[in-house]
Length: 98
Image (cartoon, rainbow, N blue to C red; front, side, top):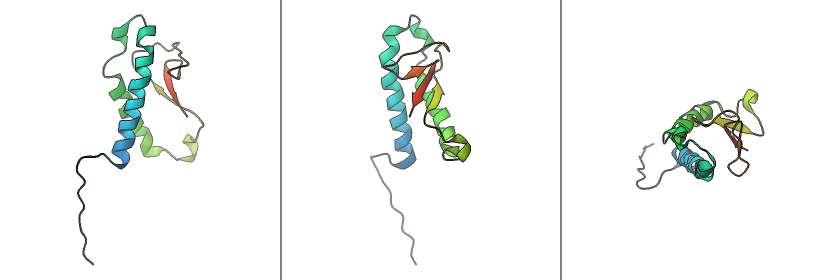
């Protein structure tokens, strides 16, 4: 049996696309709150990337019974723990994903 290789050029697929979609959603939600926070420097430009790194680690164990939940919370670097925003789905300084 011969094994052939397929190369895909141009579009992201699989896990990479999931990471990109997560980052795009994080960036979209952060834009919703930029005008609502007094210290814009608190929201680092690195915040989305830092959140993606945590998401990538989370994906490695996703599906384990102990981690099954209806909501998942990811800390937003630079936001105070008491920060809430319903439009951006942020509660206690954490972005909520369902």
